[in-house]
Length: 340
Image (cartoon, rainbow, N blue to C red; front, side, top):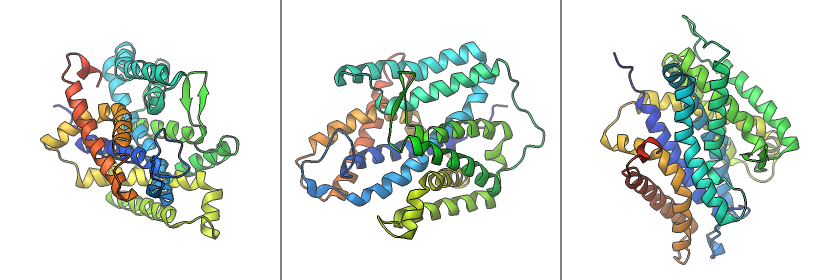
């Protein structure tokens, strides 16, 4: 029998891709953003948009790494080191090399932009493949179920580690590791841990074995933490505590929101239809191409006078639609479906 495809993970990746596009569409409307486009009408700026950006950044890329890590053991088991490595290079390495080269030529310096995700995912995947040459996969007849206490322990390790890293390298400080791997140290421990958690999730069948009570509780805790981050201002005791220990707070959001969303999609968005299948097929390419499309749309609509919130939603929606449609057209070119 063929293994049942987890359609809800495809749908969740589509949702995360759309969230990434909306996140980047919101960037220029935060006054302190370093986004390459800035609205000429400063009345459109929305200082409060940092709440939206902050909550997104706490979990969405970490959840991407978890889902990617989930599929890595199965691929390696089926393909072996050589084919696994070749396919990862084609799928991740080729877009990274081609598009980062174009960006670097335009910028006049080495730049990978948002494709840092592909770069890190390729690195993590190859480290896993190398490790598997010497380490046997984990197998257990009675795998443990996910628990709230287990999530707290993971979040605590991630948060305490992230807190100390941020004393040396604060959030949004990007560096070149080994001269060519672009990373943000403040979040990198989270990404590495979430990738490993994805691998363990596959091996221990945590997605299938997670109790509804655990998943629902995780979602409630994650939403409560997100609300706590939304309501904090620039002063006051609550804001001061969260700001001082944001590495820990953010890690709690990452773990509980991610597990909560996995449960939510497993239970309530587990099916599929032709439209969702189509979206799932374009999501990867939409992530790769959306930045260029977004900058074109932002500059093209700069002269349109609208309230900032309306313009943000308009630009994000247009960019999302164009990113998926253009990807579907590009994937019709012979040979590109293997890459995109």
